[in-house]
Every structure is written in C-alpha cells, then in structure tokens.
Image 1 (cartoon, one colour):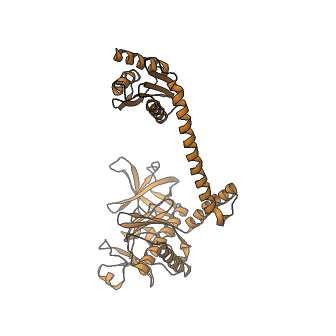
Image 2 (cartoon, rainbow, N blue to C red):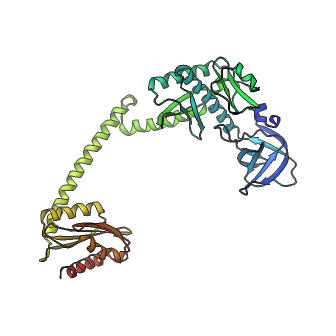
Image 3 (cartoon, helix red, strand yellow):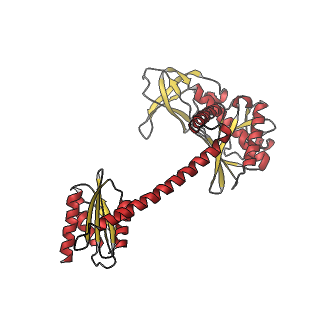
Length: 401
C-alpha cells in the first residue's frame, strides 16, 4: 500500500510515529523491523536508502522485499515496544533529493539539446553518474547542457508528482518508457521533463541550487558523465579551492599561470630523471670495470651487495660479461627480508647458469629462472648473502671439474 510510504505522501517529513508490525530475521540472519508506516526510503531506482534512528537505534539499511519495507537496525528493538518514533538523517535525505532532481534536469537537458538519452544512473556518496546513449561527448555539448540545466534551476520551476494508470501515460511526453505497469508515479517539471520515477525530490527546481559537470569518459559504446548538485557543488568548490591555494603558494605562481608552471615543473623533472639515469648507467660501467679487476684465475667473479635491486644486478652482470666474454659473474644482494641472485656468463664459457642458480635457490626456498647464459631469482634470507654466494661458487667449481 502506498499510504504507508510517507516519503511519497511528503518527502519533507523528518520524523514520524508508527506501530511495530513485526521484527524478524532475513535469510542471511540479519534482523529487521517492519512498521505500519515509514518515511525511510528503501534502496531503489538508483537512489540509496535513508539513514536515521528508530527509537534511538541506528538504521543501517532499508530495503523493500515482497512489498514490505524492512528497516535493518544496529541492535534489536525491545520486544515490548509496540509504538516507535522514527527520525531521518535529514541532511542525507535532502542531499539525495537534490542529486536525484538534478539528475532529472541534466538528463532532460541532454535529451532536449542533443537527443542523448540517459540509460543508466547511480547516486554515489561523493558524485552522481549518468550513462548517456552516445559514443562521444564534446566539451561544448557538456557546457550547453550544464547551462540549460542551471537555467531550469534558476527559474525555480515546480516539481510535481502524479500517480497515473498505464492507460493515462499516453497523455504525457515521457522521456523514457516506464517499466512498471501499475502504481505508476510520474515526476514532472512542467514543459521540460516528464519521467516515471519512485525517488524523492524537492518541490521546486530552485532547491537543487546548482549543477556542475565534473568529468566524463567512454564506457563501451556509452558516455559515463560525473556531476554534482546542491550542497555537493559547494563542497567540491571548497575542496578544489583549498588545493589550488596550496599549489599557488608551493609554486609561487598566480592562479592563471598555474598550468604552465606545472608543465615546466614536470618537464624539469623528466630532464632530471633522464640525467640521473645516465649518471647511474655511467656509475654501473665503472663498477663493472672494478669487478673485472677482481676476477679469479679461473675467470670467476663473485660479489655481495646490500640493498641493490634485481634490475641493478642484472645490468651490472650484463656489463661485466659484455666487457669480457671469458668470465662467470655471480652477484647476490640482501634487500630487507629477501635475497636476490644473478648468475651470468660470457659467450666463450659453457657453464649453464639456469642450473647453477638452482643450487642457490634451493637453500633459500627461492624461485627464479633464465637460460644457459643468464639467470636470476630470489628467496627468503634463510642464510646470509655471503653463505649463499659461497655455496654458488662451490657449485660452480664442482660443475667445472
């Protein structure tokens, strides 16, 4: 029955009294209470449920199941309670009213101007999204739709609701077909938007206050557009203004020149990163030559490092074997809670590095792989890097004999 849904009678009802019809568990074991009437809106039609209190107990979810409105509570109500008082979280409810009405206005604006139909709607905690039935949206189109939507808000047109039969629908220029066949509720902005909707809305477009499109992106063959309405516009502006002021101070640049300052900063960073990479490559070359000087009479080089990445070890090993094709190099590094290992050989050597590294990985419960000439891996520091290196070198001697 629609009579017990007070959010349809008057969406501005903030508190109410009702009788407890029942208090039960659902199939998942969650307790809920059903009331003789309620102002709590259940999740549906893209709009989230209302929050608030029933007899001082928090309402954590509201759903409509088999025609009854189920209020899921933080704790059970006392069983002796026959009449209870409900109180809405009005700030949340009015926010939802603003966002939902704003969605109607913006969707109608896109359809009036460009015949882009809205095929999806989601009211989130921070922003609202609609899916437009078009594969692309230009900046000019978005600006024109936003301008028209805000003009409708400024005119403070009435937002009317009307219950009609399926037969009566033909009297109205609906923006989209209704899915329900009975108890059809229309939300009407005269001479602008006629739409079947079960959500909550303010009495006039002026209460939406403003609409601001934030961004959009292509989703498959549709465009998903993100926007905010009402108080959320002010919150978005406040947040962005704080960030902007902070950046102007950090960059010591006035707001109109902020974009160019950021571009210069990024370009400078890229140049520095490139220079740093070149210097690191140069240092690795010097380090490779130093390692070559430590080569044993058998042409074997073994070295232990602290806090060197596997990428650095790989580069170093390739530089060493590139300078001298008659050496085998084994490099180990301790990195916090992990040991890294690289084994490489020059082109004139015949030892198999993928087999050699396995002898080391076995004692550290490690994983790795490679080929005959180059292999890498790592594992837990179950032994020290020095012990691991010596084990590899001993295995190499055995393989060479």
